[in-house]
Amino acid sequence: MSRARRATIRRHTKETRIQGTLAIEGRGRYEIQTGIRFFDHMLELFTKHGGFDLKLHAEGDLDVDQHHTVEDVGIVLGQLFAQALGDRKGINRAGYFVLPMDETLAVVAVDLGGRPALVYKDLVRVRLVGDLQTELVEDFFGGFVNHAGANLHAKVLYGRSNHHKIEAIFKCFARAMKYACSKDGRLKDQLPSTKGLL
Ligand SMILES: [Mn+2]
Image (cartoon, rainbow, N blue to C red; front, side, top):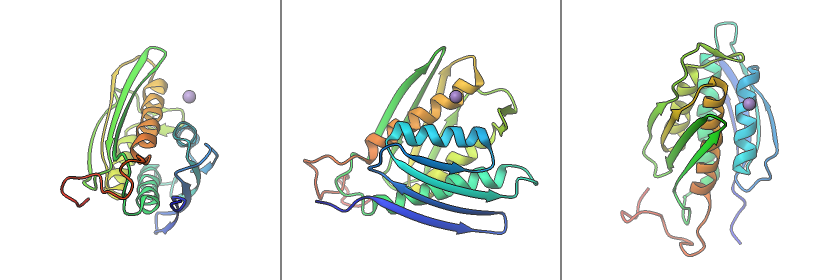
C-alpha cells in the first residue's frame, strides 16, 4: 500500500496570502474562497471533475486588480500537485480530455514530465466572465505549469458562450490531470520515462 498522495502549502507574500490542501485520491470535496466568485466556480468544478479534494483560501490585493491573486493561486495549485505527486513513480504522467459543453468544444493535454510549458488558446473575446478578468486564466495556468512541472496545452476549438469556453477548459484540465496523476499498477515503482529521470 503506497502513501496517500496529499499536500499542504502556505504561501504568503506582500500581494497574496494563500493556504491550500490537496488530496489526489479525493472524493470531489472542496472548500474554495479566492474572493473572485467565478474563479471559485472554476476551481470547484476542477476538484469535482478530477475527483480530488481541495481546500484553498486566498486573500489577495484585489483592490489593485485580480492579477496577483489568480496567478498565485495557479502557483500554489502547481506546488500542491508537485508535493503530492512526490517522486512521480508509477504515474501515467500524460493525459488528455476532449469535452463538449453545449455548443463549445475544448481539449486539454497535459504531461507531468517536469518540464514547464504552456500553450493556451481559449477564444474568449470579452474582458470579464462573471467577475473574473478573463485574460488572467492564462496567467493562472502559467503559474500552475511552472510549479507543477507540467506541459499543458489548452484549446477551445469552437464555441459561443464565453462562460462555456472557460468552464470547458477547466473540466478538461481536471480530467486530463486525473488520468495523468493516476497510477498504472504495472508500472509500479518505475519512473514513466526512458531517460530514467523526470
Ligand atoms: Mn458554469
